[in-house]
Image 1 (cartoon, rainbow, N blue to C red):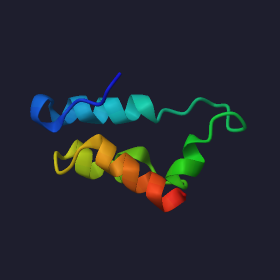
Image 2: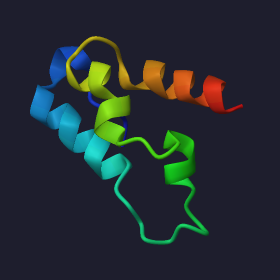
Image 3: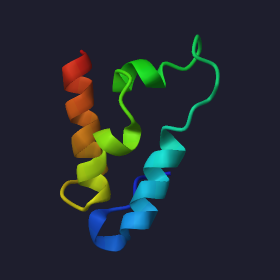
Image 4: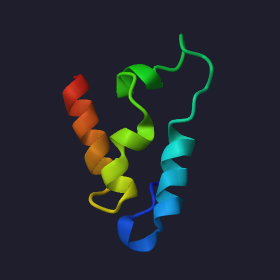
Length: 68
């Protein structure tokens, strides 16, 4: 499922999307989500998206650029 766009979603819809995409799978050896976020909470990392400042993929690409 694609991330809700800022113009067509509420803060709660965007927060829910982030929570669902980054929820813990309890399989650290197979997952890697925590290492991508470097131990930070997804809602903190994606706060600008949740608040409607920038789109989800913009932040995702910034994370990718920092990690690689």
